[in-house]
Image 1 (cartoon, each protein chain N blue to C red):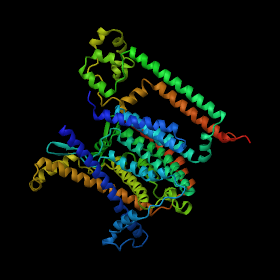
Image 2 (tube, rainbow over the protein chains, first blue to last red; image 1 turned 180 degrees about the vertical axis):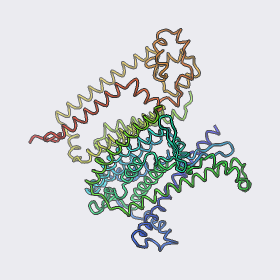
Image 3 (spheres, rainbow over the protein chains, first blue to last red; image 1 turned 90 degrees about the horizontal axis):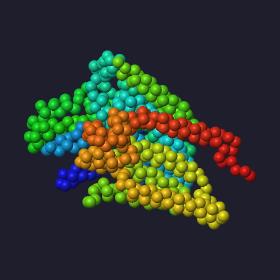
Length: 383
Length: 238
């Protein structure tokens, strides 16, 4: 019973830590976004509050919290209050299946650096992410505003359309890894780039076995759909301010608006983590396996073990986890920056162009990718 | 029998599912009905998770809650809900006919389920959750295990065993010999796993699978044809 309770406590702690981390990364991302956009447009950006303008985030947060609670007259009150939560919830839930480091073993206790090791991890993420539409729909409808409703309908049709292309673009990757588990995908991406062709093996020594080198087309399609799913530029039609005021969250202010904001950034974080895991080897270092990292810390961690009052193996395990956590954060951080980068580089699509791109370009290409991958993999396995 | 945490979770979710299903029927606002239907679908997927069928669970969530219900809600949102609401509350001959029809259907369903329950009482077989079944199987003798679930005993047998299945059913003596041992049975982890599911789906049930997909294709083509024909489904004779 005591053991079960400990496990329960560890799991609860993991959930809280991960949630708090995601939520606190959001203001940092906003800062990166604003400073980055200013840099790209030859402006200064927020630089008055605190060093480099970093405290601007705090000022913004305080403003969000202390704003007046405003409910429009025509709003459906229950749904109006529920919608921000419905948006934030899937964004927070999807991250549960993402492994962000190697398991750590301390005092005989192994803790997985992943909230839930679901063996259908990748489809779980898709399933929960598809529920994000409800937040947008209820927000738009319950506001009792025509612009909000139009924004919600746009957002909804966009998300559904791109979900299909997104799912299909990944099937080639899934056939290749032969698993739905994100952990097994990371293991499959260890080592150097190699492939079998009719019983013979070919290897490129200086290229890691990352998904992007096997499935470049799938990578491009997935990232493109990722932008549409997170409602980011160049696909932020749902809030196209020139046509729709502010889209589905026009009528929201204060902290409720902030929750939509956090939902959007939460989706960005999860999709960056997914890009990292599926195409860039996840938390693993290129060319260096977790075992090698652990061996390195076994050799070099004796002094550290003494300062931490831990055994050498425990220290090695802990340091390996921290190393991989750092690698994961760096990789994910790059893709988060990529989101910002693209936002301030590409102009917004027109609505018909958006739908054409989704249904007439991305969908056929992802089906083609699937057909080609399946054929190649089938023939490669023939003796 | 003590309540495990799984039991508590099951009963809690069952309550949520039942209440939300009832609310789907009794709420007069179609948006709320549709949202509660989505909630019911999501809770059903939790049940699949608890039954060790994660793939089915996730498929349920993606297809029903994530796609079908979203389209429902999208369409409902474009309606003039005030008029719909008044239509529901107005007492008209059509309304009375609808109520009578619904009552007849309810009576029929209750009768069928009552018949099914009494048939189950005569027959000691009960449907057991796969986890508990697999657990029990390790303890109990295999022959008893076979009797536990006579409806579809091949559910968790491997393909190699299925060939012997007729013998197993026919003669209890041989059943003792080529008893499904722990190795040949699917472990609880493998049960409902995507690999075992897809093996069944693309070998044993491939015809049914393809037939269903053909049916869906026909439905899609039909929907497009209806929508394209003059006036479509929204055509109102004036």
